[in-house]
Amino acid sequence: MKIKIMPIKKLRGEMTVPGDKSIAHRALMMGSLAVGSTKIKGLPMSDDCNYTAKAFRDMGIKIRKELDVTIVEGKGLHGLKKPDNPLYVGNSGTSMRILAGILAGQDFESTLTGDAGISARPMKRIVEPLNMMGVKISAQCGGEYPPLTIVGGKVRPITYKNSIASAQIKSAILFAGLYSKGITKVIEPVRSRDHTERMLKYFGAKVKVSGKSVSIRGGSELKARALEIPGDISSASFFIVAATVLKGSRIKIRNVSINPTRAGILKVLSKMGADIKIINKKKPSPEPSADLIVKYSKTHGITITKDMIPSVIDELPVIFVLASLSEGRTIVEGAGELRVKETDRIASMQNGLKGMGVDFRVKGDNVVIEGSKSLKGASLKSFGDHRTCMALAVAALTAKGDSEIEGAQSVSKSFPSFFDTSTVYLN
Ligand code: S3P
Image (tube, protein in one colour):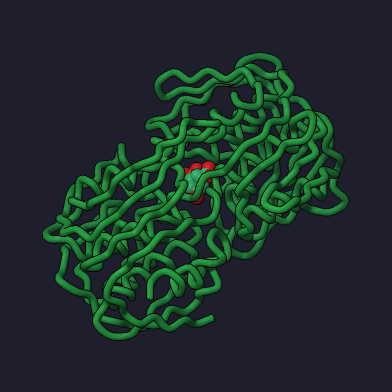
C-alpha cells in the first residue's frame, strides 16, 4: 500500500498511543505461564502481539477480551500443551526469540516459524546460549535462521556473558533459566531494556539485578497478577519528534512508558534542545509511566555514544529525522544492531533521507548527519519496516512538497492506527 503525505504546519492536541509492544509480549507470556487469571489492561491489538497470543492459544491457553481487559488463563510453568502444528510468529522477532527460551523448558518438541522477513534474521544469538543450557535447537544455515526446532525439557543453569546488549537474548535465557534447577545469570555489556526482569519479579519469580547482570533462580511458580500496559514510548516518539520540529506545535501524550532502560529518547532529545515536560508520573506496577508535553523547539546536533544505543535502539530512525532538521552535525556511534532489525535501518533511513536532500553518511557502524533547514518531498520506501515507514512519514510531514511512501501497511506490526492517529491529530 502506498500512502501520500502532505506537509502540515503544526501539531496541537492531546493523544494516546497503543500499549507498549515489548511489555505486552511479556505480559502475555507471564500470564500464560502463571497459575490463575492474569488481567491485562491496555494490550495493543498489533500484529506482533497477536502472534504471541496466538502461539499460546495454540498451546492450550485461553486468552479472551472483556471490554479493554485481556484475560489470560494461565496454567502454570508446565501447563502448556504440545502444539499440533509449527508455531507461526509472522514477522515478530521478539515472539520468536523469547518463545524459544520458554519452549526450551517444555517437555515436548516444537517448531517456531515465521514469514520471509523473519526467516532472514539472526537466531544464533539465542541458539548458542540455549545449546549451552543443554537444549537441542536446530535452525537453518548452521543454526542461524528460522525455522527453529526445539527439543526442550532438561535445562542447565548457566552464567552467560553476552557481547550484544539485547533484551531478547537476555529474556530467552532468563525464561529458560526459570525451568532449570539453580541460578542462571546474564551479564550484558550495557544494560538492555529490563521489562522481563521487572515482570518476572512482579509475578513472583526470584530475580536479582546487580549492575549489568541479572540472575534468576529456577523453579519458582509464577502467580497471576493484574497489570496495566502504558503507551509505547517508541510509538510516541514519532509524534514527539514531529511536535519538536513543527513551529507552533504543542501536544500532550497521555500515559506513556518512561522506563529508564527504554526511554533514552527523552534524554537524547532534551540534549538536542527539545522541549519535553514529563508530568503526572505514575509509580511502577510493574512499569513507570507519565504524561508528556512536547512543544516546538530549535534543536542542535549531538554525539550519541555507543553506551546510549540500547535505550534508543528502536527510536534511532526518528532520531535521524530530527538530526536532519537540527542545526549542525549529529554523530551516532556503534549503531550496527540497526542492520539486523526488520530491515537494515541504517540503509533504509539513508535511502529515504538522502532522497529528501539530507547529507547522511555511514562510516562502519557510525552515522553522521549534517542538519539542514528543510527537507524536500520525495518518493520513499518503507522496505517493509514499520519504524522506517513512520519515521519517514514524520520527515514527510515537515517537508517542502508532497511525498509518498511505499509499503505503508507495515505499521500494523506495532501501531495499526498510526495513519488514522495522524489524520485525527495532525490536521
Ligand atoms: C525488544 C528488544 C530490542 C528491540 C525490539 C524489541 C524486546 O531488540 O529492538 O524491537 O521487546 O525485547 P534486541 O533485543 O535485539 O536489541
